[in-house]
Image 1 (cartoon, protein in one colour):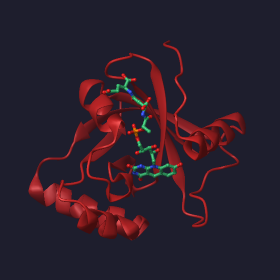
Image 2 (cartoon, helix red, strand yellow):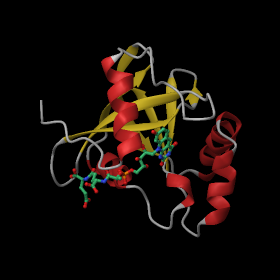
Image 3 (cartoon, helix red, strand yellow):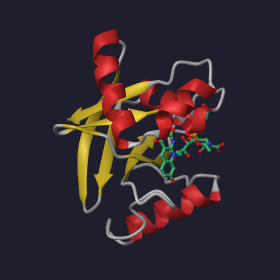
Length: 144
Ligand code: F42
């Protein structure tokens, strides 16, 4: 077990704290939207420390789709590089915590299908993709 390094971003850090300290009964939605969020515990690709990243919940059967949108920012979020280096993660969905392994989705047809699911769950992803020239990375988390 490595040390937990909280997010430097205050509202993100507070969401993680509330979500986890309540055992997944509070702080489980994105502010002002009521849409569900999961917490992805991942390993820093340089620090080796434990990182906890809230993401929108996008489900595909038992799998979770993880979207590296970061509001359409020009650069990928750092957790994308963490997942590429260390694919073993935990996904907390409310009160349940699942050991999962992620893979980045590169197949065009699979990506198109999962992107539709993502936009259905959280429509702003569409605007975020239009805001940036990078192709937003998508991962699928599958039961380990
Ligand atoms: N972000 C998304 O991309 N997609 C979403 O669907 C999403 C939903 C969401 C819902 C609720 C919420 O509270 C936040 C949400 N976010 C969503 C934001 C998300 O949680 C992340 O904060 C955001 O994507 C930015 O991720 P990030 O990994 O770039 O975080 C930055 C701010 C960060 O933590 N930086 C650290 C720092 O100290 O600057 C470094 C973190 C890190 O992993 N470091 C690595 C390490 O080894 O520890 C190495 C760093 C390196 O240089 O490679």
